[in-house]
Image (cartoon, rainbow, N blue to C red; front, top):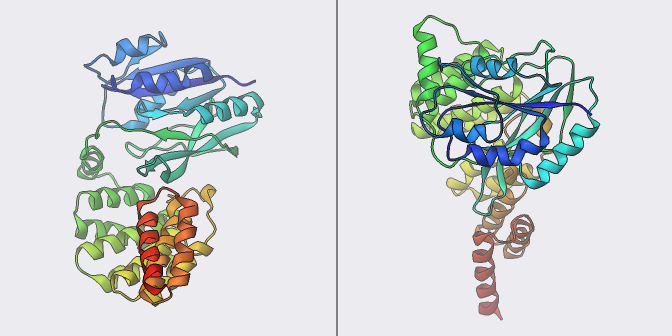
Length: 360
């Protein structure tokens, strides 16, 4: 069986670090903690789990800090987690099974990262990340922010997931500040970081600047297909915020130049027509969303609701507005199969019951 070093970078994580380490400590063979300047009880909490705690002055470079944590690892593979991540019980068992049978020839294990949840705890946003990286195999973290490990060799897709459970907001300006400092220093952003810089501008409601960055990213034609599609979507969001409804739709349709339709995009187009009360066209796009194959291993951002619940509940409303109550009710029940406790499903059932009683 292969051995695993858990490698973490932390700073002022007293509220979540114990929770994270409780979920992972028994799965790994050593724990490496790199502290980048904690002033709370983070180090004391870490010391309950490991004596391998190292200082590393923070310099606005996540890749540098993560590479420092990996440099202390002595085991076959490095597992990275953030302090506000956890391995749920079912994922602990899946990780244990993978570890026991992992082929030592595997260089990188990709695993789902669950970062968005609904009111019932169901996953609403997920994507694959490199999670287990073979030690001393020539792979390193790159990127001061939105850092990644470019994989080499054999890649395996694991079925254990890491769940991101924030308890407090992080510094909302940090990533943008790091990118801006790089640009001010005359550094050119490579395509992946152009994309993420555009997203940071969007999050900060700097719509016109974000559009300029995304358009330049797309025009240069060097981006990864999933980032290209997402960039088109963010162009649409920016245009919408700026009141350019037609341009927003055109940006969404532009995604089809890169690959087959994604359910997430079809739902956005459906919403565009729905908000215009063009329910027949909206129904077309929501129906197409249901026909899209969900392929998490493409590596893009996945919104699971777009592959079931969301188009079904919207098709219920569309067909109700189009006067086809039987079809509307059928789609409401399909939505219920996805989310039995949905308040929207219950609300719609009450409406259908009232209509039935009126016509009885």
